[in-house]
Length: 327
Image 1 (spheres, rainbow, N blue to C red):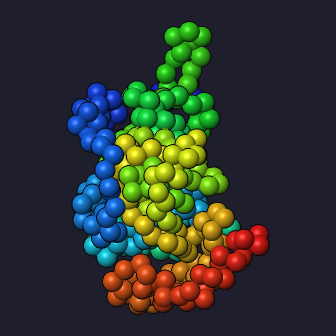
Image 2 (spheres, rainbow, N blue to C red; image 1 turned 135 degrees about the horizontal axis):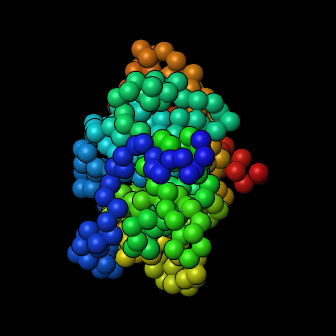
C-alpha cells in the first residue's frame, strides 16, 4: 500500500500527545537534589499502580530492570499500558503476570536468537491486549519528541507499509518542501524503569555500553525509577561529569540492586544466563508447568535476592561475571 493511499494508521494512540498538558505535570515535579534511595518494594508501591503506563529501559536482554518487574508481578499489578520498544525478557515477565491491557509494540514477543516466548505469544494472540504497532525507530522518535516538548516527531521509514497502517501515525506535508512524512505522536510514560551501572544517591547515573533511547525515555517519563548495580559517591560523579547519562533532576527513586539485570546481560559486569532463559522458553510450552515455575522463582520468594539464590546464587553469578570479562 503506497503512503499517499492512506492518511493515517487505523489504531488509536493510548496517551494524549498535548505537550502543554505534559508541561503542567512537569512544572510541579520536584527537581530537588535529595537522597532518593528506596527499596524495590517501595518503588512499586509508590509509583506503579493499576492502570498506569510503563516503559522499561535497556536493549533486548541488556540492562533489564528485572528486580522491579518481578515486584510488579508479586504486587499483582493489572491493566498496565506498556511501551514495547526493544523488549525481550521484561515483556515475557509482564505477560507471565497477565499485567498488560494495552501495548505500543515494536519488538515484544521475541527473545532475539533464543526464539519466541510461547506464553507471550499466547497472551498477544488472545485478543485481550489492545495493540498499536510501530517500528523501533518510530518509538524512539516518539520519546525524543516528548523530551523536546513538542507533540510529534517525523519519520519516513514506516510510510507505505503495513506497520504504518496498524499504527496511530498520520501522514503530514512538509510546509517547506511539500514532501510527505509520517508524524508519530509524542508520548510521556507515567513511569520509566531503567537499570544502570552506577548512580549516586540523588540519581545521577552512568551507563556503559549501548543506551538506545534511555536518555530520551528518562526525559519523557513523568516518573523515573533507577535501579543500579552500585551506589557511588556524588564526588565520584562530579569528577567525571561528561559520563553522567541521566541527571538527578529527572529521577524520582534510586534502588541499589547488584545483578539487577539478571538473567539479562550487563555490559562489562556479567553475561546473560542463557541456561535460565532457555528454561523459561521450555517450560512456557506447558501452562500448568509454567504456573509452578512462576511460583518457584517469583511468587514464593520475598525479594530479588532469594530469586538469585534459587537460580544458583553466587557460584552462578561469579561464573557469569567471569564470562563477561573474558568475552
